Length: 217
Image (cartoon, rainbow, N blue to C red; front, top):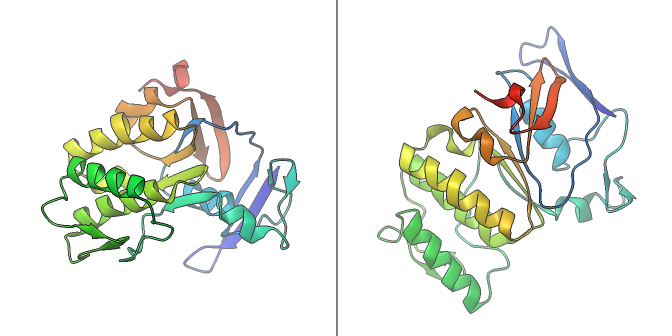
């Protein structure tokens, strides 16, 4: 079990996430849900190696994560946080297969009339916030990491792109054997997950298959 404690923004109290004890299997699609302040983003930063647990340990492939292998661990993740930053150049983009996949998703996300990709670089990132966020989806996809995490990506998307994200993009990643964490409030799509983990005040309220009665909206 892991825990992480920090002072709140007001600085007058502490918030503790945990103890959290999770076992995740390769290829699982996991939705993490809960109200504001429940610990979802803190868990995301622990999972991706941006925060270190103050008690307990994270393990990957029978290796305990520590300062010596922290960089190796982080390289397993492609992450889109809610406060994302969009780079103009795509790291590791060097194949014609990447080029084909990139243009297919540009079209699917209705960005092909706004943006082109040449040698792994976007022609522009001067887009609306919603368009920029859709572009981050493409960059994460092309990183081709074993584990993906999306922190409320669909929160400010219109119904069309929200539907593409849940019914096309996530199943596409899952079909490739990726492990996926999705922080979400979109209960209409919970049934697409393998598991739903609900946090409440830093505690795991439940961790159940998506078709269980607790997860049905």
